[in-house]
Length: 263
Image 1 (cartoon, rainbow, N blue to C red):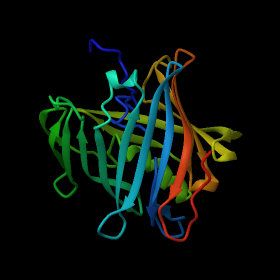
Image 2 (cartoon, rainbow, N blue to C red):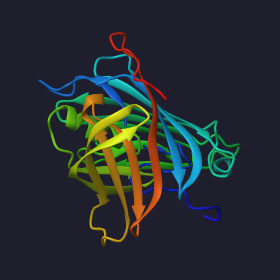
Image 3 (cartoon, one colour):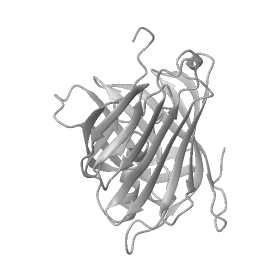
Image 4 (cartoon, helix red, strand yellow):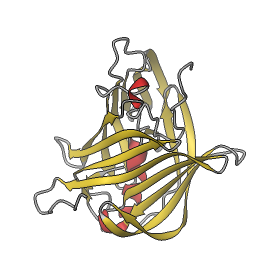
């Protein structure tokens, strides 16, 4: 496109909302013996090539039925980021948690602009094996494949797997009108300083399947003590940090928990 390319390839597209959408949050029962997901609000500070892009808020709330969840992102872009991100944009995913992991049911994106050129509204019919609706302003009717995620639910899928004691693995993601595959793998551990204090984290990388090794790579610092929520997210390209999200605040929405500290 003619304006600066702020699309991230593994689900966190910094028009901030289309998943930055990028790019995480949850609560329910993933599988027998699994730790529960927890509803919450988490805010990340977003930087692109070292320049502040503002804040991104991700909200996870329970749905109206058991094991159903609604995941939403809201952006508070900086003055510069408003050139490519609307503060009025909203991205939502409705999904359920099964014994096998996350299964999306609906996806919606309102790009917050008058033209609505990037708007999407999708429904997954797992019985028929189809996903239908509108993707980036054009009709879509596509066959699904097992485990298919949208650009929001793919953020939830690794967390659900980690809570269930499973290692993140390969995930298929519907990005616009194209299905892409990403390979997740554990890269080590690190204790890092965050706005929530010092935290022990597990680092997991994500690369597009069959890439030549020179594409964009994601690194996630998941905090087991915070229900495996990522507290740092980095996108690298050609050895350089392209995009960085760092946790700014966390508020648990279940009645039993006190909010995590925010500084």
